[in-house]
Image (cartoon, rainbow, N blue to C red; front, side, top):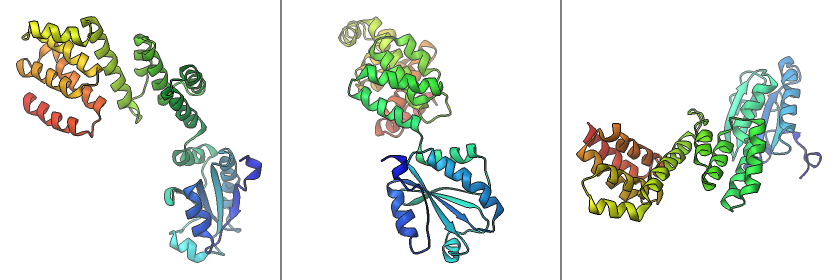
Length: 289
């Protein structure tokens, strides 16, 4: 639906609130502006809210509540000072603020609930990559980087493409750029671990050759480490854990702690909340401490 077909701003009273705000927020983010005609700051904030809401091209709507005409509704939502803004999504209050703010700050708050166009582009690129439409995905990721060079989703997407193309150094460069403060950081660390495991496994000749080498020389910790890396690359995580643990049980400091580090990387790969991680985290603590 085009923006000119959407009534992006509308008045709401107490009787309509459940339908036009709560129910409507199941489909779109609804920004509710509690205001009054006599309120000077409300008149300052109003145009800012309108500009920001318009920028979402129909993804966000603005509902205006006159507190003088809807005192019970204002009381219900704890309005003590105006302008007061409440942002609803999926039938629930998701964000709120009171007073006049800059357009940039208002955009940041609403974007934190609604997401933005760049995130939608990355989501679409992720879907294309899963469908093995690599060139199309890469073009979208690069278009995002041109607008935001630090976007973690785009950096990770380009790194995945580099891994597919065996350009592991480029993948590492991209993944090391992902800031540790973002939620995708663990995914980036997991991919870095997979790259490192792949390098070791490839150098060792692959999974079967590593198995054969360990069978011939079972006490060689370097060969065991190679095998653990090959298990990890092959998604044989239980076997990988067992192999790395067999190393640190014999030598906690093997390779300056690289077997321990491998186990920590595996926690990220299989998921910090997985049963396998929970089981092996306790096991690691018992061995080391």
